[in-house]
Amino acid sequence: MSGVLVPARPELWIVSAISLLGVIGLNRRFYALLWRCGGLTFVIGSVPLHLLYFLYSGLSYLYVWAEWKLRRVAAALCRLAHVGRT
Image (cartoon, rainbow, N blue to C red; front, side, top):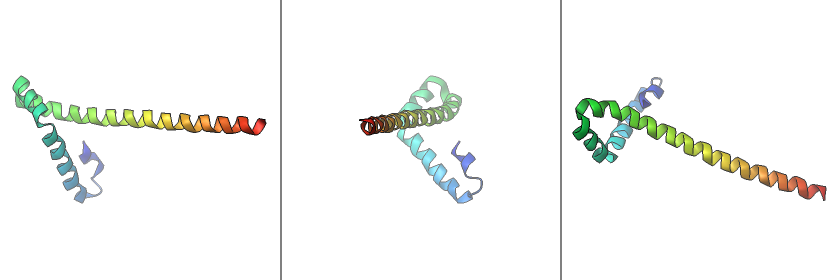
């Protein structure tokens, strides 16, 4: 998945590989459970889905954070607009 972003810069493949190995290493107990439940094929199919989960959960967090920040800015602007009218 991360390899899609690096064709123009082949030296970044090593960064992608290390990142992928880091994610797999940090989640090794989870992948061991998947191995026991479904075998190697199941684990190989689950890793990309798990990476997709990390991607969309990170994007969801970013969306909520940005919306919260924008609402605070909008509220502050609204307060400033009301102060100017009185």
